[in-house]
Image (cartoon, rainbow over all chains, first blue to last red; front, top):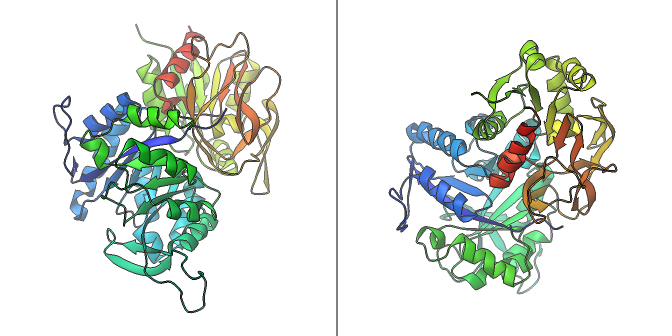
Length: 263
Length: 202
């Protein structure tokens, strides 16, 4: 009896529509997040993540509606992230049918938000989403990382803005504040399809005792098991699933072949 | 023909909608309410629960539902606890060192699991006893969705799961049923289990 490693497709949703290219032949409307969620569910996804990338606040209502409609049709857990700024945003998403809510930029700006949300809703539904990139720094004044040790920096605004915050330390702090899970996204690997950033996963795994979701870089079937070996409890991917390059079932077969427990 | 009248107790805990949808999907006539008369009269009462033990007990007390749950159990009328809604059925909860009195319908304490990674989050297998009602017809390797850090020690006859250590994943005591996992989030396996449960109400 071992908990299965979760395979999680991530949908980027803008104004109620899935963005980024999608290429499902057996889907009438590939841009409808509800339809895609149903398909992924049918294919054996263990959980779904919606990332709301809606820029204008006016479209937030549409997001709640999408979450509501998805939760009515899909009977697996749904995590929603993106644009969560306050405790009330979490409340509204949970009421709309989200099981977990991802917090990113707002928590970087004000870490206490993590504690407030965890106290109100329980750690189990608060996911700290970390967009991290490698830095070129070999040594920093004060000398925390040793020579040649890779360091990872928290970024915001889709990786465009560096914060100078050590991603590993930030993950540990967020868990202390009450985060129940870490969604660890490598901004360097994201979109490259060159594989997950295994060192980053291992570094975060070493300092937190909550589940870690590996994100960013999945390109082929062989990429998933190493992420698990590095310490990930779940593997998330977006484009490889949307484009139909990889199917959920094939990813699970590959994991199973590598002796990783899957559902 | 309408299905059994099932009330999902609304005491401020989240995720009521999921439970409502999943039960309606398998044919129950579901009402989400804090109305105690309706909860008393229903064919079955579902006690959901998400979040902290103490908060859930406080919520149950706030709507005054504890006597209704006790009454139903004493009268042998169906109750189903889910996740923290299962945990509050025990005598005591010990969460973050905060000891909270539970409903005491089930003997035992709810304690933090000894596991390297918590919450226990994801799909796990379970080991039901012979003669199980809830898991009837489900293959042995069926997985259910768990998300919790605390659990009760299994008593003889309980369905056991393991995360760091064995714990009570489900109990079946006549008309009293409870699951530590979320059948409403466990896809087709969860629907099968809920169908099995509904069958006991007919």
